[in-house]
Image 1 (cartoon, helix red, strand yellow):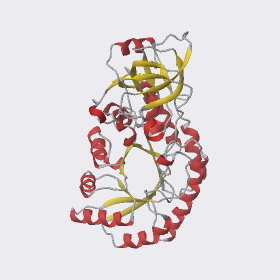
Image 2: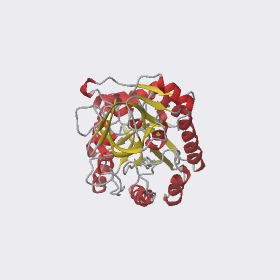
Image 3: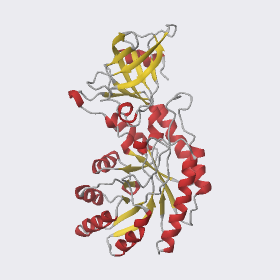
Image 4: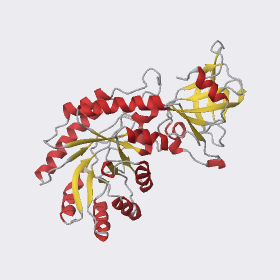
Length: 385
């Protein structure tokens, strides 16, 4: 992953920092765009995965749209130069202020997540003499078979409308003259590696597409969300996802009507593998039952292990590979017991000052960083493209 020149460059930099391999990013974007174009699919990049400016500029340059979940993400997408007609705004709790700003930017679509939200957007749009394009986010009750905290498509989750609410939704829509229903929207979860989940989603989308047609709505857009997972265990062997197989599932099982567009909202699958968190070992603590490596990076820089018990591959990138293998708990400096990147991680015998790479940190790393313990926000470093 890291060339000799890159490692030499790292030695002169203050740690911790996020490192982005822009070559990996570009190759991932090219692969995704090529596969999606084959089936005439439309991709909106989910900014919540990573809103680093350099990363966003590469994604915008590749021709993708933007999927936003806050008013500030909408503003960021506009600042970077994303086409407003390719921006969608999701989120279960959009404020009036955020709705107004999105309307003023004339974005393509609001993904609406409750019956009440329909009325709110209609009222705000009427006040400003605007017409809002909307897609109804429907909870398909499809199990994503992923971590409970990143499952979003079950009836027990807070997202979207349940199917039994659709008749009431249609009644409200009839009285909303400042709304234009352009499609339906789904998202069942994140880090999904079983493609059968997406087949199950297609079957449900087909049913609901027919339901809306039977109720007098000719939908332009079927937005199936994202959720495609990445290989956290083998980042070098499986750096770029098999996008062709992913999109082929939808092409085979989704029943598009003539003129209907299929939209996706991919985040992690586009940016996760291009990023690593680079840290130095501050202290080595050897005990009778446990050995600890204490890093200068912590949960303030990468929250996923503490929040989701998520796995990230951990590498000592400067130790002599001939060193004996030792089992370490790799931890950060934060005053929390959950500040741990990995337990019983087998690494070459390590020492103070060695550099550690925590891999596949390009998604939900930098964006979730915090200033807890009055920690400084760390910098980002980029490959030379």
